Picture 1 (cartoon, rainbow, N blue to C red):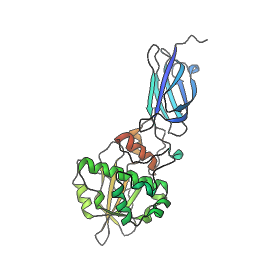
Picture 2 (picture 1 turned 60 degrees about the vertical axis):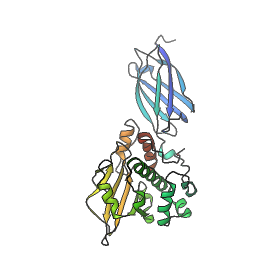
Picture 3 (picture 1 turned 30 degrees about the vertical axis):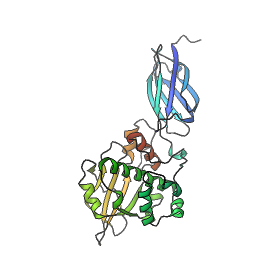
Picture 4 (picture 1 turned 180 degrees about the vertical axis):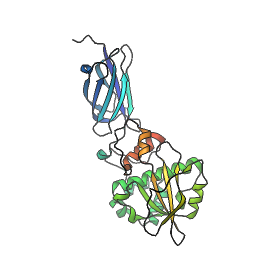
Length: 294
């Protein structure tokens, strides 16, 4: 029997909706005082918090806790366990994109969403019907739903009309290379409306946004919403006929870093996964894109 101080730790691991997860989880306490006191727990969460027994406590209670769910992104925190009091770990987790099984993203699901009528109008103008929609890569569908939820939030909160100025989505550009963005034909007044809404949008660099042939970006053509995470960005281009095309996307890596600076995420030069952006919107802004990942 060890004579070290030990106590119980109650662990509640939640999704971005604040519900305790159902998942198999590995939890490792790397003791920062005595390495031999490190512990590994294999735990099954079933919608309720779990109690871990006999965890070393003060003065040897400081541990780096690495939490690795099966279906969610890993996370690491520091916890100082103290005897004689309630010790809890309560953390929220993002679904791991490679484990996501998205639901409520089929064409028949759109009408039931709060933004469904507005999105259906755009899809109709884009000649994207049920077969075309259901044939899209699921991440392309997720991006359109993410953007729709974010745009609706802006309209409700600030009274800034955006949906009505989106004429149609360029369906031929909905592909695996553009899974985190859409290219949409928009009214010219959308540029002016966003440009004149400093309470919602800040000017942003647009040089990293590339447009199809015959579409020409211009100076001061890009704007990003003023959110710490889950920003929507509009970048505009015109053609020789004076028409407008907008590259509309959600913030990539900075969103994940701000939302979860301890999340296990490898940053690359690629766009962030639309499933991560679903989680960021819900976690950081309380916006529900109205589909599920598990």
